[in-house]
Length: 442
Figure 1 (cartoon, rainbow, N blue to C red):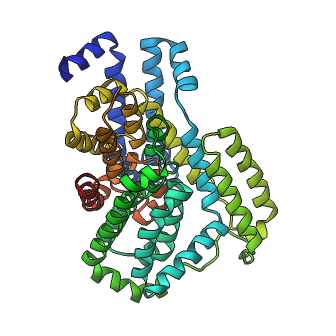
Figure 2 (cartoon, one colour):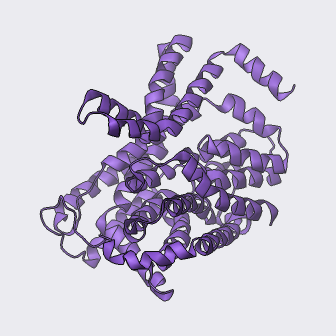
């Protein structure tokens, strides 16, 4: 049967397939309209109900959760309450969303950020210590760390340091979006040096028997080459803008204490940093066991409170919003297999690579690779093609890769609180094209 006939038969057998995908499409459209809602909220009377509703609709992190309510209603109508409750409670796996909340909260603490900044400062100093040197170091070294501390932690650290060392210098909007797109693409492919750090790789590593040696020889070296070439290309393209940032260093407010803090925190002792690294390592090692890493996080919160004199105030709002975003995304994404799987199994190597890259822009890349594991007897060449395409397209949109919402949440304040999806797409297209050539043709 042709693809069209298969999809029509599946809709005829269960019309809810079409309804679930239509709601998902509306949610995606809402993400593109979020900036418009945020702009309308700023024009509305302050503290009014209208302004608050518009502001809520303009929060990208709540979009998929909001439309999950519509999905729950539709599923209850079509399949009944018992089926809807079973899907949300027993079928959907929220482990990744919970993990991202915990790893973001731990990775964004003062000792971890200070340690990362110290290590990257040494690298940046080797190439001049300028804002451009920091920009290069964060965008090359930072994403590659994602292969060892997970992509979510790498995204959190890179976004925080870019805010302090780059975005605080008020670069031009074009350079802002180029940097954001480059960051998202580099993090997406930078986690492929190992088999345990990138969500799209985790989905296939066990079913297909992929280990770190396989990842290094098939993906890792290509990722390093793509990251270096893309970052150097943008460095040359924006050489004048990056050079001009050096004159704005006095404008950066990177060393000021938190305005809401009663007093600046004391210096971070080495033992405290070591404990924080231990908590982060525990979270990474137990990433597949929510009871263990959530339990560890509860101990961590108590430890952070006891050592508050050395800490900055822990903000959980952003990690929780990102977790809510991802939970909503997996709720919707889990109902899209009816059309994605038939598409994947009918493609040869090149169309499969391109198809995975494009589909990733409209769905989490981990879902794309997971669905590929359901195709029986998939050729090894097609397996590498679908994973390569999925990680290559992971920077095109906020929903393309699980760590992207973390980067957006931490950096949106530099974009008038609303990152344009088209601006992000434009910034990511160049690095995505370079990664596609290297992953598919080399």
